[in-house]
Image (cartoon, rainbow, N blue to C red; front, side, top):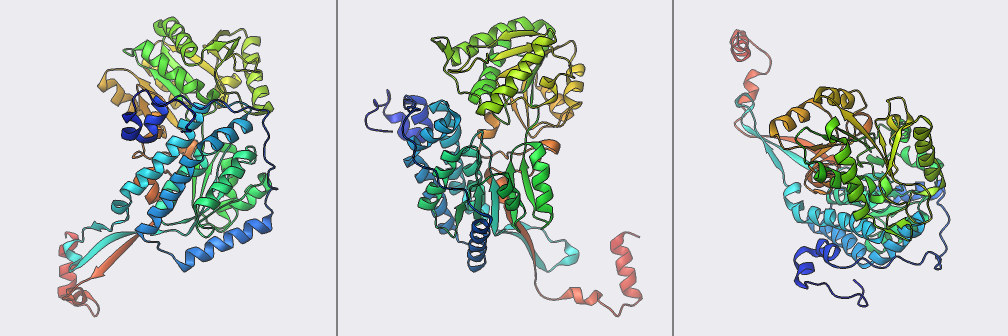
Length: 508
């Protein structure tokens, strides 16, 4: 951190816990002044630039198709170090693009999470790269078999605006560890962050390893139509279908990280106050603009009022009001703010009970709110919210709650709150979700050794940890024949003895 900031209360903590310790025990940097001078942004790239950049990366992958472990570790280290050195610039760029993003949310959810993934990949890379032995049946002996993880070549990444750094660079931990080249397109809606990412990549990595292009939807579709060796897209299900269709022209494999309505389910024995605290944090972080944010709550009917009181208290604690405004991030863009107001206005017009959670962020008149027992046909319950709005639906029996969850598209996340392990196991077995946190929210995504991905309409494929390494590798099966060559004894021409032997092996 900058020398002008006061030292940590416990100096040894940052040394022991790295960036996590810095985040927990140092005050966040002051929010940048929003009227400060912003450097001019570079013009968007043309399709010719995109094609030339892809050709350069493709040639590099063909010239060196299997970078060694030292090279890959060097890439991961350089990118992590570059992020750590430029964290204040990153905070300022994202804040400027959002028009108000809490510095500590950027430090933790963007920078720390990405650096942790890069360091995790570096630490475990040797084991991931090893040949994986497979057994050979007696009938195919003598011989040996193994899986050989092999780089795919050039992997494309199309990233969204809501976590513009993390969702652009965190996948690089898996992609670079697997030995690939990377062509990255961040969101055109966060131009300052995109420009900073492009410069950061250019400073940290050779142009034959990673490159960043910028542009709007037209360039994005051209990007998806390149003959990439794999394409990762993070965004909405609607656009994900378009990206998959464009990639299909080249039979490009895709990993799609999409979204959906992720439920939080309180079981009858849940600790209501604790669940409310976790759901408040998971919902209101980044003003609800998180793909795995709890989208609605299902809880036993007797728990409704205690839960509502507890979540209001937690929201006010996490995001205290000063001068009538809460210390929380804003909803991104005029269209996002207008959409959130429309969702809330429909709830009010239909006579639903609406309860405030905390004061609105600075410059906004949208009050973060809970909407009690909305019907299934309201927009709040048909669409992923991406806003600080939380439908709360009481249930009378658990079967009804499970039917509500299973009656919807399979979500990116499911949050369970309860104590009875048997009931939790039953819910896990009877529901589908990309990932699950039990007695918490969001945190399963931050566990580097757990894969992150969706299921059904919430996505396909996964990254993070070894699963991400495998996702961006060709796991090439190899069989090596040994001697003596007894297998040749059963090659043509065959006689009666051969047929008897085959029937014996088959089991007749």
